[in-house]
Length: 152
Image 1: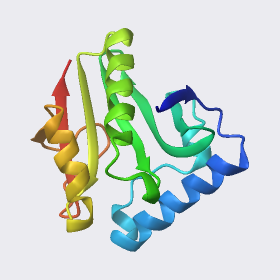
Image 2: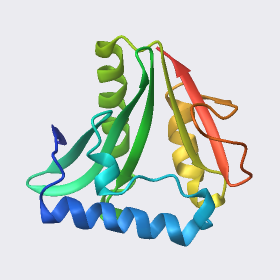
Image 3: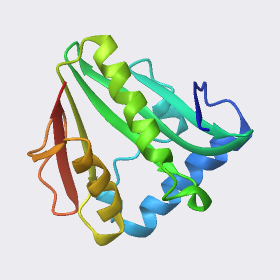
Image 4: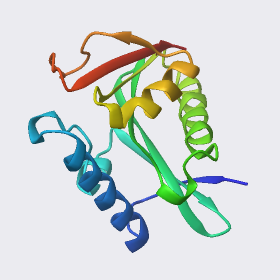
């Protein structure tokens, strides 16, 4: 069973996990198209970060960034390679959407890559009812980015 908990990003394990996430983004996206947040970015007051654990093992993470009082953004979705395909991301995303609802957001949006490496992520978001949209917030059109949104 996955346990999802608020995380202050102070542990060495989660710091290394975010480092792996950023390295993976660099392998699959040109630098100007990487919108993943580093640890300092995830510690900003407008971002809430959760880690996911199974029996004491870090298996995933996700964050919710407040764009305004009615609009949130999904950030830093990642599942450990050994746990992909086991439903970890589904549970983390469901948690983020539940929190968005508790906060009174009317919409949740996200940016992900347009490349084949990001196809599983896009499929996950589609399965939760996210639809494709144009750039939101501070994003601009980018052939390496896909933007999705969901009304809450």
